[in-house]
Image (cartoon, rainbow over all chains, first blue to last red):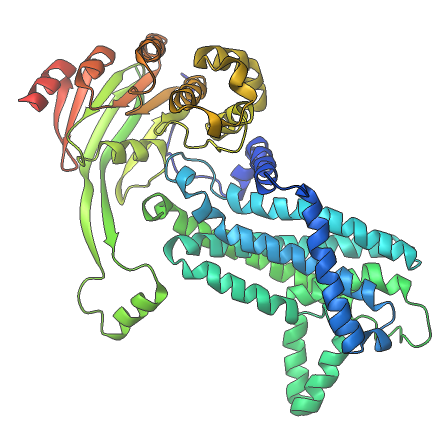
Length: 297
Length: 241
């Protein structure tokens, strides 16, 4: 007590404080997981059932009706490896954007690092991601998957990009949501776009060719570069590279066109860089706005 | 004695916002920012307060005089528009009992969750768990979900967690009215014990008799300004007059 210095309350160290409150973070995540499935018979099984049904729907509609099965080898694995990542992003960002307002009762009364709430939301989504990943791995092994070091690393980097992105955007929209509840609706819209703005359901070659046919070579080149710069596109392609590509072998799959050229040496650093900028911007905005959370909530 | 809480001429304006959507704000801007989008009022206006370590101070005043707002500034939940707040050592607030409780979790889970929210480490909670349980008199119901608790049980458990956080500075907002009379007496004894142990107490309460028993010094707030600072008996007398 005697040695303590006078400090100013209410000025946290941002994300560094979250590292210091790991125990609280763990409890918040455990609480969220417990509360989410209270009174439900299937419990955590829901995180298998929901993506399972979603997968079947897409597989029928796109694989069979629209013919993706014919021109993409192992389309189910292609589809599922993208879906699990986008699902993770959707759930993480959707919940993170609502986390500050949702925990308003607490934020108004007790000072604690408020970054904990968006991060706990992302963590909970990561827990839900694990069962989906297991299902994906089973499918991959059936398809003859034998990963090397590069594949595993690509999957880790893809996951990291999405996590950084979800935390960064979650901080930004979570804080903005305190002032304008429009923010969470905007996020819902963004998430709807995200599923279609990355090569989850279709392949990147179709984007390239489609843009070429519609706009001509010059404009298509620009648009395709923009499309490629989307960090979600990069992360999804990294997952394709890690999980789907090793299962493709037949001559009808052109190895040069499986994933976009320069994925690992150019696009991956770009994706990581953008994700880092997003998380820094998110943290910056959050800290600018958090001073008035207590009175605005 | 060193100063535990140092509040230097802080002011806080609240915006009574009438609009909550981008649309309304946009319309307002397009119309040339006519009229005020929001009304403002001063919740705190140039408040200064120094509390020594080990002192027990009562913040008194009528409803809306800024007592709770001042407490929220000391705990760091709110930041002042101008002026500075500084504190020495860990601050814990019994600002609203059970704020971090979740109805669907068991009493035990809530003790851990709320303890961590109030800044205790895992080891500290483990170590004090028995004591928390004893003090709350919850007994066998500790593993029941708290939504099935009576309001008295709920408050007793929440208060018990809060009182075991062992901070250097204790902020108490209108929580002494919890529980039945025996429990109230127990809480009061505990709070006095904290004071005797050299903890700094800042208390907000409308129960003037109780406040005069716990605190020596009283600070009277009126419309966000300190109008009197002195012996608690004098301040209570003025408030009652």
